[in-house]
Amino acid sequence: MKIIKLDNEGLYLPVMEHFLSIQGEGFYTGTASFFIRIGGCDVGCHWCDVKESWNPEIHPLISVKEVTEKIPQNIPTVVLTGGEPSLYNLETITNLLKKKGKKIHLETSGTGNLTGNFDWVCLSPKKNELPKKEFYEIADELKVIIQNKTDFKFAEEQANRLPRKVRLYLQPEWSQREKMIPLIIDYIQQNPRWKISLQTHKYLGIP
Image 1 (cartoon, rainbow, N blue to C red):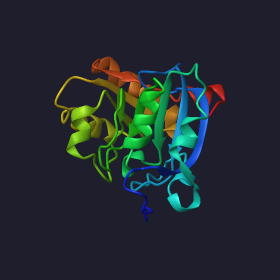
Image 2: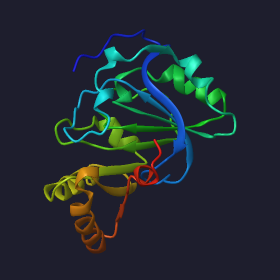
Image 3: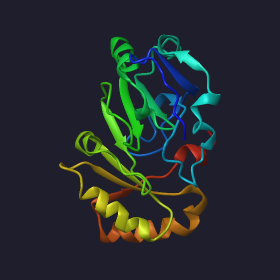
Image 4: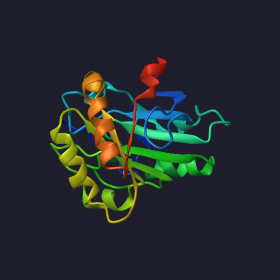
């Protein structure tokens, strides 16, 4: 995947969409959050539910100042997601969000570079391109997508790479959820350090 060249300061980003919703996954499930989805991904999972985010060239370059001004004042949490946001310099946007008093969450596969200032990092590693070392070191939660039985072994391998204790989640791939949820339940009962994460926003019919 071709990633477009941007200014070094990250003053503009290829923003696919931004919206107010409820966090549907992981530790902060149920929390009102403002999402900023950045286009561009170098992983390209075949089961990805936002494939339209992969190509950054089809999404407009938007001033990060303009985007941050759209966040409601009463919403404390902002989630930077993708695509793969770590492909870009996130210093400017996170500095602007900090000045607004926002809590900043990053959802990442950890394949790019670590830039920016975050309050929470959800690391979701993928088999076809593993995270860089620094993302294991700063992760607050590890979320592994479970599409088939071999993914449980991958999840354990990824958890063992973490240098400190973090929250561990197994999340069924949406199209395989009916098949995988019983297996995840059984696995967690046998391995209680893990918890289940469900895409509750999809059940609720919200973005």
